[in-house]
Image 1 (cartoon, helix red, strand yellow):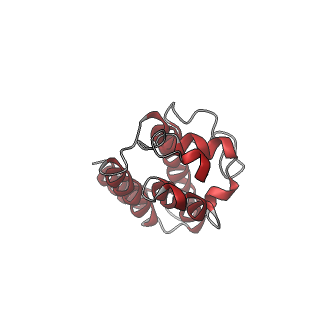
Image 2 (cartoon, one colour):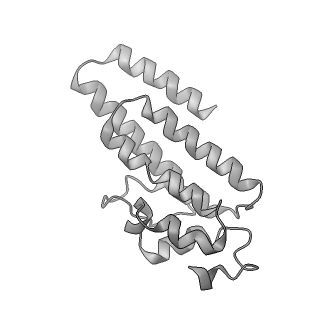
Length: 152
């Protein structure tokens, strides 16, 4: 439903604006949506991409809940993929690069505890402080039972 709204808004913006105005408005809309998805209260104080408050929102929402590593992660990964696909329609390279953070975040909930380091290595997650990474990993339903701390 949210992604349908994003698509509809994209159509409206491209019809009503032209030139560089389209790019600026779509970019800001995408950045602020990413901020929302990365931050919704549970991701408070997360700072990505060296910007102040812009990109915090999606991640905050994820930190709010325990994500079941069997079924919940499928819903999470699906949602994150849909956000990324919806905004890729904007054809703004900078925005696509910023939304790249979503894929490895989803993978944090998909892989076995022993594979967490591999997911983080050579991904946008490497830029996050250790404390921020831990805040995501602690949301895994198997965090306590699988001794993830010793693998991470």
